[in-house]
Amino acid sequence: MDIRVAGIVKDYDGTAALRGVSLDIRTGELVALLGPSGSGKTTLLRVIAGLEIPSEGHVLFGGEDATGLSVQQRRVGFVFQHYALFRHMSVFDNVAYGLNVRRRAERPARDAIRRRVLDLLDLVQLSGLENRYPAQLSGGQRQRVALARALAVEPRVLLLDEPFGALDAKVRRELRRWLRDIHDRTGHTTVFVTHDQDEALELADRVAILNDGRLEQIGTADEVYDHPASPFVMSFVGDTARLPVEVREGRVLLGGTALDIEVAAADAGGGALYLRPTDVVLTNGDCSGLAGRVTSLRRTANGRRAEVRLDAGGNVLEVEVPTQRPLQVGDRIGLHILKARLFPA
Amino acid sequence: MSDTVLPAPAREGRGRRVTTEGAGARLALALAALSFLALFLVLPLVVVFVEAFKGGIGTYLSAFDDPDAQAAIRLTLTVAAIAVPLNLVFGVAAAWAIAKFAFAGKSLLVTLIDLPFSVSPVVSGLVYVLLFGAQGLFGPFLKAHGIEVIFALPGIVLATVFVTFPFVARELIPLMQEQGTADEEAALSLGASGLRTFLTVTLPNIRWGLFYGVLLCNARAMGEFGAVSVVSGHIRGLTNTMPLHVEILYNEYNFIAAFAVASLLALLALVTLAAKSVLEWRYGDALSGRGAH
Image (tube, rainbow over all chains, first blue to last red; front, side, top):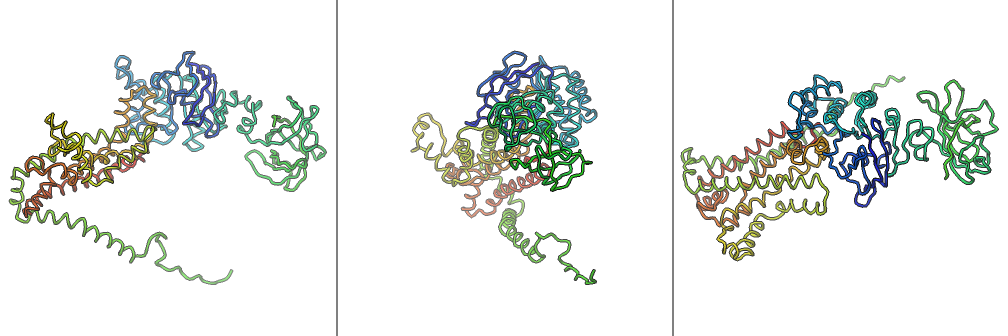
């Protein structure tokens, strides 16, 4: 079931949480809503679910307007950040809840419910735990019960609010892979909210990046990494340095020095150059171009991070340096920019 | 390295937490607290039972042969049987509204819920006399239709409902606020109706807190003196509740009977206390709302 979100505005007593968000999600797609806290990503997910009523705009499921439908009528599977399992019910009763509350005419027979619940517990790898209570489960297990409960009602779309937010790093990584696997097997159109860019980019087919109630960009990991639509997207998906530059006659000038790069949108005037630590390499001793002095060195997982104070303009740039390259604080080095993005100031 | 031997640390400084006072201070504080409790809480309670059984078990029981005493007990039970269920419903409704919804006038409602605690019971009784009494606002209307409120059961119930209103709501509001609305949202998203959600999710989540609130509400409803005294008219065998009956007997120097009836009220307090302790010990997490999800 595809989802279309059109011009959603949501006000809370005069403060705008969403300022006109439009978004298309294709059938079977796994989409992440990514953004800093307060960006409106959870509000957007709740609007899609019908847990919040938008001030303006429409939500369409499969081309059909669902804006006026209640949360019960929308048939969405919603997984809450803190699981929201019913603590007085066993795992089995939690998963069966959505089937048991159906009207008699639509309710499956007792043993059909039982079979479905056990199948789902098998799918989320919790077979044998159906008689436990939520308090007797670990965080990761509770999250999987919550997912099985949401899947039990055969939802048209699956919505997850920070599904791994309350779990420790190792369990997060395991569940991430496992969720991707479940998604590929069941084929549900899935939207999940996260503030963790690694999680979003690793797990999702496409990532929608929100900032201050607006959609900044939606695209694949490659698109948002390599063609960020805005400085915000560029700096949100990874470490970024910003260099204020001037553009004259198609050349980029940093503090008067011409940089050896080509920029696509070479508008004359001011602007800012955004680059990542891996977009810059050290030259072999040639300091005639961009150059600076190393002010600090840090070990990272794959190499070293050098902070370089540039001669031109005095800006500080972070550079990824291979471990085998000898380098010390105070060294003067030349730099070569492999690629960078220019945004108007 | 020097060979200087460090002096051994003072022995009494070992193995105790920095926040703990010395043995003398601890003993003094504990004694002060315990003797205060003994003097002002335990001793009066003991006196009630000692006085009640002064003339032996036979005299004690004969106090309940008095038809007026039986009428007082019946009336108290009747009033509690009406007032407590009413406040159960009001309390749940108020707590539900305050904890789960945002609306204009919410803080006013919270203040109003506390009003019966801050108003003297005598005043709350007088208010009903002024409203429903013979010279009151609705007096002529009630008289014309032959409805008795003041000096009758309806007035006593009204006064009791007013005085005991906060107990259930006060107990539930923090609990429901702590639990939030995620469980209800989960139930709704799974297709449950509002009523179904309330019955299968909200109510089980608050059941122990609710039970505790009802227990306190009931204890107060049976024991209320001030407000009921103003509206009851003290008609023996008709509008006397147990606390009022105790007062009448006491004023008539019928001490044994007075303490015998009082012992029933004291017993109620003890049962409430015991039930409260059991609940807190067994379901402490559920009562505080910090229960694991």
